[in-house]
Length: 343
Image 1 (cartoon, one colour):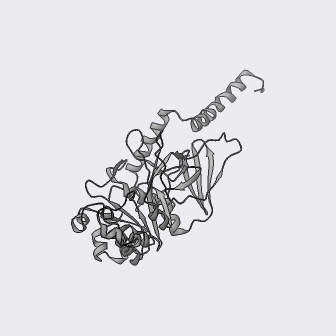
Image 2 (cartoon, rainbow, N blue to C red):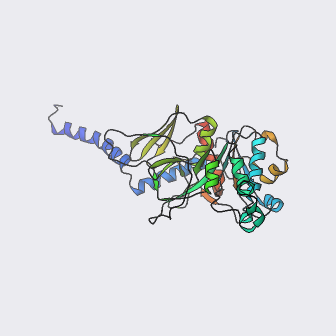
Image 3 (cartoon, helix red, strand yellow):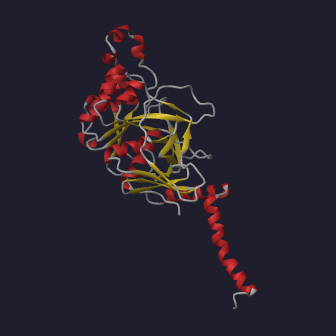
């Protein structure tokens, strides 16, 4: 038909309409599309055969038996330091603490003898000395309250990442921006060679599907605990956050490209239900009963699953998933370069 005919124009418009509609949905996703996308993600995870975790990640668990053996949680800081030393002696590649130490040890507060002995001899001082020996990543929590917390000295380790935006970018921030931090004491923050935030919030239906890998605070970019642990293990390399559009970004770490959404979240590829990763009781580590092969060369996440101390979340594959295993899942996804990518 001649190009000027009405039928030709109708054919062109009919062919272009799906393309235009798809483009609009990519950039401005309605809530209904988001819910459908999440449901599809849940269905795929539940029905597909899960890839087993790599051998590079293990969880050291402050479990019920550890509390019975050592005592109530939180433990004295010198006990935590001894746990870290035992893990380092066993050959752990890096020790990531899914724990925050925001206050002085109660033993230090209650013991005049400890205070008189000097800062280096207190439980906190002993833990700081252990951290200075390296291969430890401290955890902290970012806050997002409209009324920020009062100023508090925090020693954090920013991510030296370049932010690359497309020419037509309108200034969209591809990450969450925190208003405050809940961190460990400065003596511990200064002693640790690395740190990362622990934040992971479920979606509106209560299911945890994605975890932020990067977030901003006070004008600087910071890594999550799992990302910081992997970077300590593999070496940081050149890092860049490349913005694709308002719904997508890519975190480039050396030659690895990690797909993120428009807020710096990684869509998790869970490996299965809880306890899919190997667990080692902290009591066995402290007593010397843990097998060296279970720890040597591994990224070790230290957390707690004991009743009254644990943090659990709901995932598409399990309703009682330990928070520390979320961190292990992120690290495993990064190590295996095994990501869920949205088209």
